[in-house]
Every structure is written in C-alpha cells, then in structure tokens.
Image 1 (cartoon, rainbow, N blue to C red):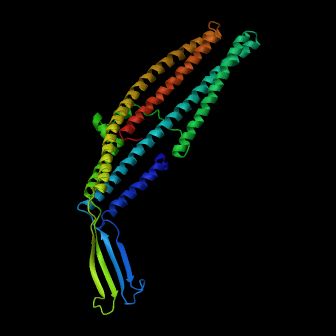
Image 2 (image 1 turned 30 degrees about the vertical axis):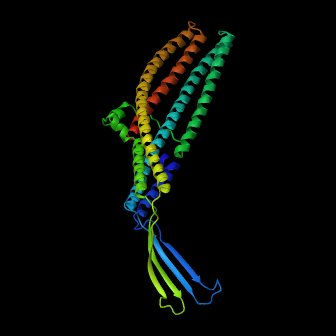
Image 3 (image 1 turned 60 degrees about the vertical axis):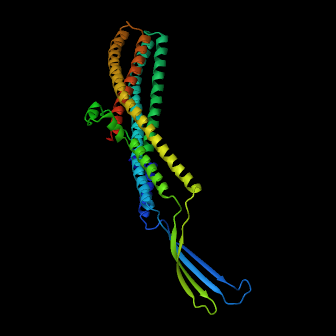
Length: 378
C-alpha cells in the first residue's frame, strides 16, 4: 500500500517506459527523421524577362555511423535496466520508512499503556494518602507529595497520548490510513530461517549496489557511443529539379544528394571528455556505495545483538524492581517505609519499564530490518 502511494514510484515507472520506448526507437533504419528541402528561382526579380524559372525539391535522411545504431540501442537498454534497479532501491527505502514509522507507533502506543498503568498505581496511592489525611493518620506533606506524583503521572500520560497521535498521523501519510501493526512477533527465529550467504554475496544482492553497477554499465555504453559518433551523421537523399527555360531540352532532372560533415576535435573532444567523466563518477559512486552498504549491514547486525542484549538486561531489572515495589508497598502500608521512598521506587520502575519496552521493540525492528536487507520484505 505504501509502495503504491509513493510518488517516486510513479515517476520511476514512467521513466522506465520512456527508456524502453527510446530503445525501440533506436532500432530505426536511420539516425533521425527525414529532411525535406525546396528551392524556387526565377529571373523576374532582377528585371530580366528571359523566362528562366527553376523549381527544386529534395528529401534526405541521416545515416548511422558504423556501430552507432547498435550502441544507441545498448545505451537505451542499459538506461532501462538502471531504472529497474532504481525502482528496487526506492522499494527498499519505502520499506525502511514504513518500518521506522511502525516502530515509532509501537513504542508510542506501549508508552501510553505504561503511562496509564503508572497513572492508575499513583492514583490509588494518592487516594489512600488522601483518606489517611482526612482521618488524621497522614501528614500534609505526604498528601502534597502524593498529589504532585499523581500530577506528574497524568502529565506523562497526556504527553504519551500526544506522541501516539503524531505517530498515527505519520503512518497515515505513508500508507493512507491509520494502522496499528504489532511487530513483537518478529524475533531471531525469522532471521535463523534465512539461507546462509557470505557477507560479499549479501552485499552484492543489495539493490543499491546493483544500481551502482548498472550505472557503471550505462556510463560505459555512453562512452562507446561517443567513440562511434566520431563525426556528425552523414545524410543522403534525392533531389528533383523542374526548370522552365526557353529552348532547353532538360526540363526535369533527378539526382542524388549527400552531405558528409567531417570529424572535428572541437566537437569530439568535449563530448568524449564528458562521457569519460561520467564513467569515472559512476565508478567512484560504486566504490562509495559498496562501502556504505557494508558499514550499514554491520551496523544492523550490531544493533540486533545490542538491542536484544539490552532488552534482556532491562527485562531482568524490571522484574527485580517490580518485585521490590510489591514488598515496599506492603511495608509502606504498615508504616515501615516512607511514601517518598515508595514513590521514588515507582518512578525508577517506570523508567526501567519504558527502556525495556523501547529495547524490546528495537530488537524486533532490527530482526525485520535484517529481513528487508536480505530482500524478504514482510
């Protein structure tokens, strides 16, 4: 759905069809369209009255230079192949943008859930403290402390709901509708099912590297075309002359017309230099793209490992602090622990829970990113 809505997708499809059309047009017998010429001459303008009148017309077509037509078709075909890969690259970028938006939406959605849970916990404590204050069992300072904690919890809930709304709008912009997609089902089991490939093979399968190779091929074909276009295209055609001349036996004549522009360094050197520069630039871009993709793949793998490790660590810490709060809350009701200590523990628990949730979904997203990198778009 996001791919169908992507505006660049439509542009690339149109460019691809245009390149195919140019390749088909390059199969023509001639290097361009025909040229029609005509002349009319008489002697009346100069004041003569001898009756000399000439009508002359002709048609000519440009001819391919040796190998030029084949090279022109090769350039158009290479351009179409390059655009095919550019479509795949854009598909990859759209997939990553969708994943980033879904990850943001998942994190903000669960942040709202955590904020609601925390708000409910603080509300109950605040209610108990308020009852205790009314019964003269709790000092005013504890009531103010509980009230402040409850206001902070409500503010966090409002903030998280606002962030969640923004994340939904962002998804709506990409895929055309608000959608909640849980990515928590994607884990290492999906990654382990991928076939084993060497690092070099994985990089060579990346559409960005494929595109850079296609661009090098296109630049090479352009350079070949410039070498075969060593002079302007010659033209050949037919001329017809009809004359009105007193006493002339040659009223009508038919002949062959040809025009051959000669090679010139003034024309050829700049064109070949430009083609060579395009090839050098495409080759340089291929090297830079390979380096970029290599670094990106390494970062994705490292992020997968680090996010999983962080998630497991924070999940363990979350469980430990959660168990501690259960005992602290019981001890607070029995007067063994201060309200301040309990609220600080709840605040710490809430932060740990948010971090645990964040690392968890980053881990799931990293698993999906590995799948996308291998061409397995979910």
